Amino acid sequence: MLQPLVVGLGRSGSGLHLRTLARLAGRTGSTGDPLVALPAVGCDPRAGVLRLTATPGEVTVVTTLDQALHHVDPATAVVHVCTPPRLRHALIAELAWHGFRRMIVEKPLAASRDELDALIRLRDEAGLALVAVAHWTGSRLAGRLRRLVRGDRLGPLRRITVDQHKPRFLRSLTTDGHRCALDVEIPHSLALALDLAGPAELRAAYCWDLRCEDRELPRMGGAHLELQHSSGVSTLLRSDLGAPVRQRSVVCEFEDGTATGHFPLSEDDDHAQLVITRAGGDAPEAPTGAPATGGVPRPGRQVFRDDALTGFLEGAYRGFLAEAPDATGFSLACETARLLCEAREHRAAAPSACTRSR
Image (cartoon, rainbow, N blue to C red; front, side, top):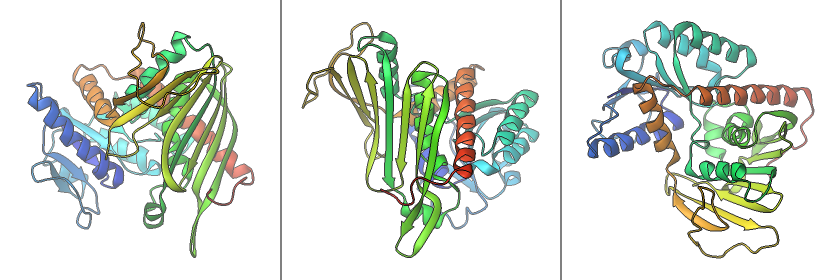
């Protein structure tokens, strides 16, 4: 078994990683194939004032890495790096110096091209097994979309549109982990688009301000990206962080039909939906099951469980144990980070097309 060390106990580290690790430990332990050794160790200098949701026995909280080393052995540990992207390289270098080699890094990998290049060099020189969080691409929904793209049942893929909208006023106003909306939701959808349609060039990138009563946060209202893939596919990514409702959807337009996928909106439910229609056909009103033929989903509406983060962490831990880290996933994460860096530079060099949330 491997013991988790979660560095950074904000929303990502505490609300997502620790909760998911507890669920994964219980699930694999109950089947006689334990994978995660609890308690995990949570490290954050603010630990004394944070309100954690973990139950007793699930986590030991410390405020420094030196304290963490009293509770975890680097040889059998997996570090979950959940700090803001601008702090990543120095922290990973310090972890490597202490002997930690297995790391799961939150998105995006780096905040600049120079930091990304430095991180890649550090990975190679120190022999690190780095896995970037990309549970959207590892989800069951993404798997079905990939089979549609490769199965050619609806003809060639022409266009991808991803909408990730949610009200994020409180977190944006009370934390400073992200300085630009490009770093909040867009990394998930960007990785998915690159996974489905292949390498791409940036065509446009915009951000706008988040406004609430007498407060205004520059560049945190939302983001808009346009890509042109070498495969001929065009992609539009939209994220409104001042939206009144939540939405996590992806629309794949093929020559002969459309596939519309809906990711789970929160930890309250872990079901995804996929609606597949042929050109000129009506979308089904009720789930049909729509069994796959040859592994390729058929037209209809499908509803299925898709606990993507739990599945992603299980795959990462099993890869660490087998000493077979996902090199393809790391390459995709680097490509995603490079395009995000280009988008930040493009946004900085051009006037914003939007000045408020929708």
